[in-house]
Image 1 (tube, one colour):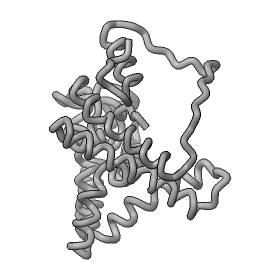
Image 2: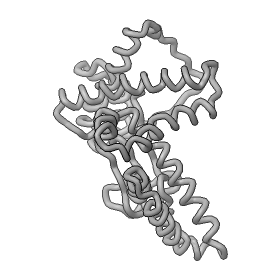
Image 3: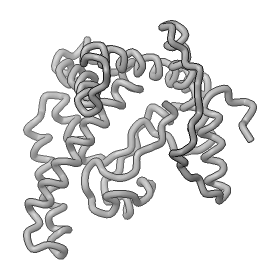
Length: 246
């Protein structure tokens, strides 16, 4: 059932085609598959690039399923303002979204403001982390030259690239120290991003590099993500995220 034209990402393509045809896809935790992993640096790096090249053909075969990032536009705008040196405006925008969410929560709770602040604040923080991951896994070929040219972008780009893997290390506590763990993760992301850009040039599509943003509730916004956890609440940063071929 694999597409013979796909050398990588063929398993993702098969699963998505089965789901589109009405089949039920289920995760089976008892199943174990062994892989002969590439452990030499050059072979490993090349394989990571190969995986990245699957994003563009998958996006062509399954339109709308593989944006660079899927999130609330208000959260993205708030972090964008902070990145260009306007953090106060970013906080003000988040406060406005929080007030709007509080009005929507008022029929459900007698004290909506604290809940709205908690939800909107957590959503915005998650959105920042998600943007950092996307920066490292797809946007750095554009972001790094921009940071070199515009000094005020440098702190935001550095924080966006370094903080997510450090948080990941803190949460997972792997066998590596944080420096080596972060370096290995960034090298992994760099290889994958090179593959994504190569695939986009080959397929002549920018779909895997473009964000999908919604400005209303995901459930109410035309073209927005399908309803999922947090859908319909207007909470920044919530909603389903695109699958990954990593």
